[in-house]
Image 1 (tube, rainbow, N blue to C red):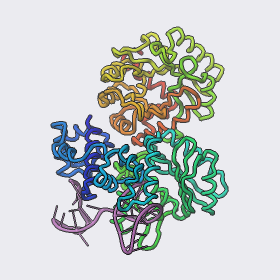
Image 2: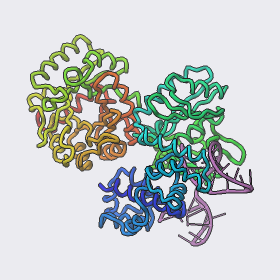
Image 3: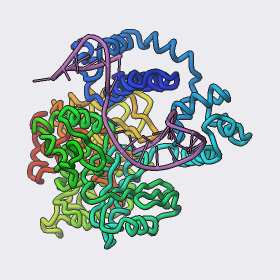
Image 4: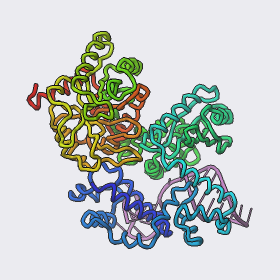
Length: 575
DNA sequence: GCCGTTTTCGGCCCGACTGTTTTCAGTCG
């Protein structure tokens, strides 16, 4: 699948055009194309073959020709020529907060700066001050921006952002001055990484809210504090922005600060056509505010249902909201159990009893203990004997629990290099739920290996199917479409692994899988009970992929979960 | 470069903040 590669080309193309001072709408066309292709749930090559490129919004004749050239030859001549004209490294400068394309252009043309290192040297020598429009404050801001960039390395993992944001919201909710408070931005949309954390609040006394925020126990440094806005660094080193807004505008501000940018642009275009104006203070007809207290009020005034934040990416949700056919996304409270937990029997830090206790607190009706199999020695993988012994303990525990909650006998079985499984079928048949996973040979194409596992009658799910670690490791080479197809045909679930640095399947893959009729299972892969909260990260990822509750195995009651396992065995003639 | 229920040309979301300016450009969300 070449979607990612193509999206990167168009993104870079936009950067170059912007740098060269091209028409901003020209630049935007390339940026839109990049985003569209990146978020596409279908393979661009397939769309091209079926002649459907022209149906993509924002892809006209010219971009179509470029896409086709890329698919045919692997590159685009015009782009190759364009690239030659600009030094490659200057675009890293755009990552510095406060530095945009105009500044990059100026720095390059006047001082020959082409990298962050160049820029640091120029600042030390005081050269920036000589440039038009540059004063001491501007230089200081850039210097700070570079520090921030180098420290954070860019974006925050969703799990970290959610953890910090929830803590802040829970604290401030208790404060008497705060009436309404929400997380917004990409954290609210559950995007896998977020730039910075945005919090919105309203109440009777704005100053008091700001004071409460900057004085929170985990705040390390206050960067900026004003009457309606403040920015702090929390102890984790991440930046958090608070905005305080008047109650009448709360919904408008929440809508606005939640984004995405593309969603908002589309929505405002619709407003214009209807003779309205939408901004962060409300929806206006002339000078009159006709909506703004809640998001629902605004969308409803536009004749739309309110799209859940997770799908506000302008990938069809606006049309669906207009036609009252939004999906009923899987709910955060719809999950009945976690099927991927590692106990002290293998490399987990919590006992099975610990998990049971936490699961009951979370309102689950079942869990599966899925310890590692024998080949994964570094992770305390269980031999057959150990596994059977563990199973016996689980049986006894279930008797003691008396049906309050059911502990299923599971395993995360290694898929060996040749695609066979780490336990023989005689062992697998004794398990309630079998998850198969690849833990080795991350550089080789693992498609065949996983297909073979999917075709084992006892394998009920594939764990973290692509093997990616966010920000650290690309997934192994994999034909995800083949895997999805096989999973759908065999009645094998694909996991949405909720562990904060995995989120695998990712959002776009979830959408592809569900479209193909695959059942998903959302699990945390916890190695300690303190990891079990991450379930919501996986649910959020699935929601971003337009996944409905009926497509998620662990929203179903235990009887249906068991029927799912039995159905596959029956299909393969082993039951 | 895209797009069309006023248009095949002339628009393309909107406002705030900042730093450097005597009226505005650049950046951000």
